[in-house]
Amino acid sequence: MDDPVADRIVTHLTRIAAGEVPEAAHAAAKTFVADTLGVGIAGVAAPWRHAVLDMAGISGGAAEATVWGSGEKLPLAQAAMVNAYQIHSQEFDCVHEGAVVHPMAAILPCLLGWAEREGGVSGEGLIRAIIAGVDVAVNLGLSSRAPMRFFRPANCGGFGATAALALFAGLDETQTRDALGIYYGQCAGTMQAHVEASPQLAMQMGFAARAAVTAIELARRGMPGPRAPISGQFGYFALFDGAADPAPFDELGRIWRISELSHKPWPSGRATHGGLDGLQRLIAAHGITPDQVAAGRFLVPALTYRLVGRPPDEEMTVAYARLCLPYVGAVCLRRGAVGLGDFSPEALGDPDTLALARRLWVIADDNPDLNALHPVRVELDLADGRTLACNVAEVLGSPARPLSLDAARAKFTACSAPAALWDAGMSLETLGDAAALARAAA
Image: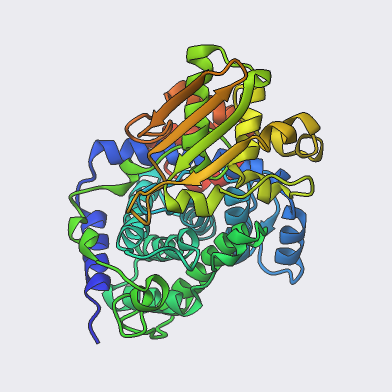
């Protein structure tokens, strides 16, 4: 059975292995490797991380790959799962806004773990595999034509990780198709975890990374998988998306999706960032203080409303707060920004922040794009009777308004990541052994 999308993926992997990669894509890959390592190290402090690590190590196994930030050695699939959880657990990892996919969370832990275990992987080889994996993950997300029912960031990220690992492992065309099919057989994770603000949201990233490693291990041993996992009658498009158009895959080799990723300047759902960006602009332009704000409104697309339109609550968990635009908006109005420290139990229970958050409302606009996160309009009613407004079309951290290199490094430092690791990531193409990154991340 043919799968035209799988065929395009296989062809693209061959092309990347042998051909040229544009400098812009090359540079973007290094930046997002460094960013992802920093965010993953910060994830050591995430809720439930100890339980995830304990579960991953309870059965023992070969010491193959490093857990970032604490240095434990686990079997590759388990280490990839823990590191992927850490990356996504604080909503601080990079994202492709149009696809609504966080591709690096599954891809980088798999690749660095493989480089540690197998050896012989250069920094340049890592860059190429990352670019390939991001292309696959993002184009799958861009193909969707329906609202998310399944957790697309993990589902698509796992396909990307499988493709990238196939390149690393030197799988032939048949094995690569098998690996994609075997991964699809494990593909899981729904938006219910998002609705409930459950830590399983980040855990689904971990499951995707573990599944990608499993798929490669079985395919390299000759086990066949379904041959039409994406376009088949019961393939990914039909069952997970519900409605899809694979046209983005026609752009493989012409548009490099790694260059379209967005940094996340704040550790909250990307859907909150348009509102935070607008608040920062209003604060800068008008010197607004929290006591001046009588009420506020965020007018947002339907998807943004679904993702972060939830009300603040005195009993909200950390995961809930990161996905609550009124809460992070109130923090921004009071502090001028949002940081990792704004999700402690003390911060979540602050009565002044909660009182301000209850004066902020999220309202769905009439944007017809079911996958749009912006544009966003922020309106603030002041106690003196004025109403101030800001329209945000391009959000800070996006390719249209990228973080400066200094700002990206400041974020990395705020994650308590070592300076030497940043330097290694930004000179990745010079590394003869890419596994040095994983060792430095310990």
